Image (cartoon, rainbow, N blue to C red; front, top):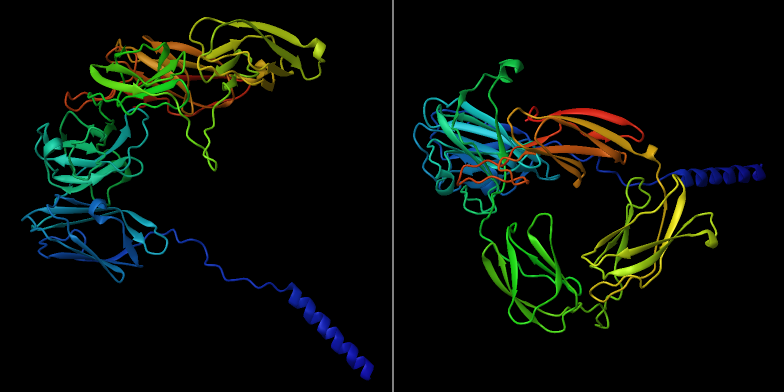
Length: 554
């Protein structure tokens, strides 16, 4: 019996150890993140109160909240000369007015991402509160949306300003009668405003003064005045609400006609960049003492001039630059690389950077891309062999570098579809004008088949207005092809890699071949931009036909 008792005790100990090993001890989790914004459960006085004569308003919430810059994110119409005082007390917000309220006036308060959940910082994205110091509440409204004039994307966080007066100078000199802010989708809404006709102006207000007084502030405006309309009741049908007029405005940044040279840059040996504040129409350079021999190039946006010197500087030289009659004297110093870590030694760039473009493309030649213009060469050899070929069967192609400004060099050669190739170029074949030469170059690729590409056939239907339009095919932010149209036409885009594409178009009103922004002083809107209303999905070995009725989607 004693032996049996010992066996029972041992068995119990083994079972206890087993269950202890299986048990897992873990800390309790906090649960899913609270993404519900704070809710207003009580207001004193109530929203849309009349005969308001208090000095403060109090909002009660269902949780503790924080305030995010109420001076900027609480919009009060009509604007007050002095901002109210905002105080959090428990789960409530107290707003005390410092200004004397106008008699018989409806006030609107728009809270834009100002009130946030204390724990998770989840914002109450839009909250509108109104009251009247008179016997009734104004019940007229204006609504609309703002799109970026060039990209046609929503213009969010724009201040939209309403003026009862219609003078053109108002946005530059006078605070508005009403103000609101655009949402994420670019939409805006004025509620509880007085009956009448208004001037509408929108502003990306950098200095928070509700005035258009900085050249880098984006704006949107309407030439004509807008008449407020009577608001519908909440019980009105959705179809009836959909008939209410909606304004559409296009935001832009005006051209700053004052030219200015930023501090010039010397990023690599022999390279000098002259970035200007705005696009350059005319540029010239006059040596003050020593004359340099260089190649000159301007970027696509026309605001940066680049010089590539044919011989690196050994001493400082001076030049007088003239950009649109704006004169600058620059002192160009020899290139000095910054010291690296540790020992403080300067690391000298010893090789010319060269990359391959269009490797394996069916319809494009393999191209060498150089970081610096290269010197002419009568001939050089490129070795091309297949993956399974021996060295003695290697194909040798002979090319030359013309005596001109060369930063890209096509290397046309014969490929067999779907066959793998290796291209090798020996070192020290190319010499940049900065004295640097290339290292050994090598690339491997499989030659594409024509069946790996898709085709887009786009029929463009132009408005019957006799104007010129430019249409552009894009892949992301990369321009694939741009065409000029003076009449309805069909364009075939061949050899497109499978991907998503988009198409934009603009009306070239002034015939200068480029899109132009607007100008408020001359009341000129930006040139009208159009966007094909859907993404274009290109598949391999597939022809896609579409029709773009320009003007029908805007």
